[in-house]
Image 1 (cartoon, rainbow, N blue to C red):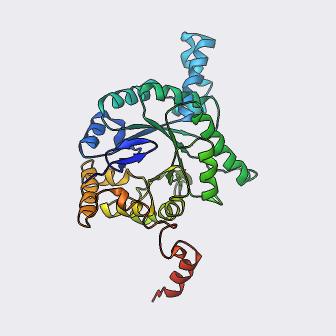
Image 2: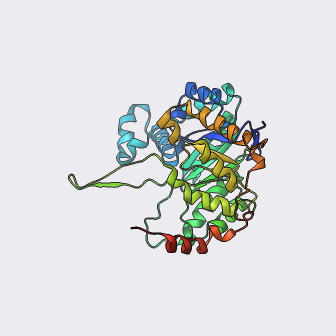
Image 3: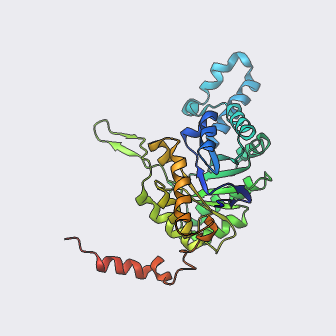
Amino acid sequence: MDLTTSYLGLSLKNPVVASAGPLNRHLDNLLHLQDCGAGAVVLPSIFEEQIEREQEIFDALIDHGADSFSEALSYFPAQTAYAYDTGQHLALIENAAASLAIPVIASLNGTTANGWVDYARDIEQAGAAAIELNIFFIPSDATESGLDVEARYVDVVRAVSSTVKIPVSVKIGPYFSSPGHMAGELTEAGAKGLAMFNRFYEPDIDPATLTVRPDIQLSNAYEMRLPLLWIGVLAGRTPASLAATTGVETPEDVVKYLLAGADVVMTTSSLLRHGIDHMRVLVDGLTDWLSSRGLNSPADIRGRMSHANVDNPEAYERANYIKVLQDFDGL
C-alpha cells in the first residue's frame, strides 16, 4: 500500500494532516502525531494583531526609552491582550522543522496586506515547508461591497505569496457569491492550495449579563457537507491543491473527502475529542478501506466522485435539492 500524497508540491507519506489547533503548540505532541502517522502538521496561527502589537511596543520603547515601558503599554490599552512574543512562535517552527521528518506548515492569520506580511519571510527562514494563510474577516461594515471583500482576500494572498518562496495555501470560508471564481482569483494571486473551509467564530449572547461572549464548538461530521460540495465541484478544475478541513471524525470521512477530490484531509476536532492516538485510527482506517477493495493508493479514488466524474453531476446541483425536498417526509 502506497499512501504517498502530493500537497502544495510537497511529498507527504499519506493524506491525513493534523490541522492548526492547540495540540500543535507543543513539540512533544507534534512528535507524537508523527509517530501516529500524520502526513504533515499545521502549527497554530500567529495573528496579524499580535505581530503589529509587538512592533508597536518595540517602537514605543525606541521612542521613549526602556524606563518608560509601562507607560508605553498604556498608549495602547485596547490592544494589550494582543501582546505576544513572536520569537516563541519562530522557535516552535524552527524546533519542529528540525525535529520532524514530515512537512511542518506554519499558519498566518490576517485580514489586511499591511507590513505584518514581512513576518512570512521570518517563518520561511525558520524552516517552515509552507504557509497556510488563514484569512478570517467579518465584513461588519455594511458599506463594504462583496467586490471589496474579495479584493481584500486577493491582496493578502498576493502580498504573502510574493514575500516568500515556499508554497502558500489559503484557508477560506464558503461565503462568496461564486467560490469557484474566487478560487481562480486566489490562485492567480499566488495561492498554491485552498483549504476548505474556515469555521468562522460565531459569538453567543448571554441574556443574564447582557454580554456578547465567545463560544466555539468542535466540528462534527454534518459540517462536512458544504466543503464536500465545493471540493467536489472544484476538483480537476483548479491547479491548486485542495485540503478538506471540517468535520473529519472517522476513516470513512477521510475517504469521502478523497472521493470528492481532496488532496489532503485535515483534522483538529477529532484529535481533541479522542486524543492524538486517533490519528493512527484515521490513517490505519484509510489503509484498511483501500486494501479491502483491492486498491493500492489514495490516487485510485481521488476525485472519483467529483462533479466532473460522477455519472449524474446534477447530484451536486439544484436538481438534487428539489429531489431531497420532494422526497422528504417529516411525519
